Image 1 (cartoon, rainbow, N blue to C red):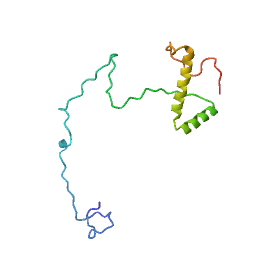
Image 2: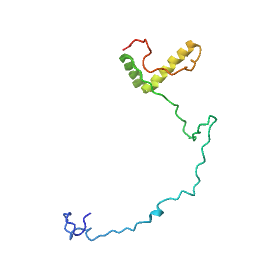
Image 3: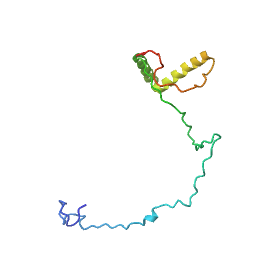
Image 4: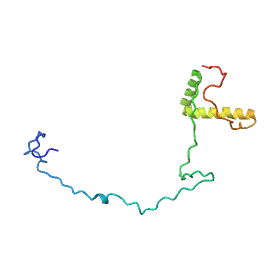
Length: 135
């Protein structure tokens, strides 16, 4: 805002309605703006579950199941068919992939006579030794 005597304004001081206006505001004490929380009750230490892990607070919302990420290389025609199905069914590729993996796993477990036992050691990354490149 231009002030009297400030030559940056193109409005002459005689025609400037703000030239003679002044604005003064007293500053409130800063202590009145800070809330004292020292008297508030502190949250109690979180309870531990039977495994010794901290129990998470319960929300009204149901928690999402934990997920992991996997990257696969598939033939172009299969991917195109999957995209078409996702488009027409109005579902995500992830939803269709999960559904397909569940169906294949159910079929494998049926042939196995039940669920597979847990792995003895972690899988190595990449293609298994001796496998052919299927690209």
